Length: 231
Image (tube, rainbow, N blue to C red):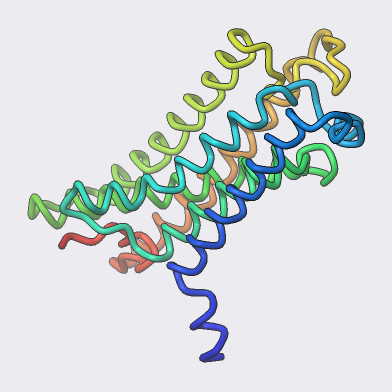
């Protein structure tokens, strides 16, 4: 067990994620410049293949924002939140987009949107925890729960809007408005992916908020909600 803990430290997880993104980005760049290397990859990918190197580079950059946050603010992100964020980024951008898990693994996208609802709701509770401790005030548990839910849903909706903007501006297919060959879907089929994502995000947020409200009702602040520590 000690060996496992030494291997799976926050630092090692971060280094492994960065290395994986660098390897994936290198591979994607090779696909673009080495003739005939991308023939097989084109068969299994989707219509936003052209933007995979850009998405991978952005994913690599976003891995560093928790470190920047810790350096520039008076708070430190806990190891739990940091590892959750790293795992989510790898699952969404690296596995999902680069290795096409969104197509190859059933319900991969739904699972990620569910987990985003869970993570964002936990972060909403954590923000309320910070405000209470720093301002020396006590909010009603119902207000905290509603805030956490609205926080999770607002960011979830912003994400869907950003996907819509990318699809309109860049011609990508992040909202699955077309099939993998670029043929536009019609009617509810074109809306299905977006609504499914919103529902999955809502379910994840509701579960966390219900459990959080119950714990707060018992005057027991869950440790998992205290994930932003004041220095």
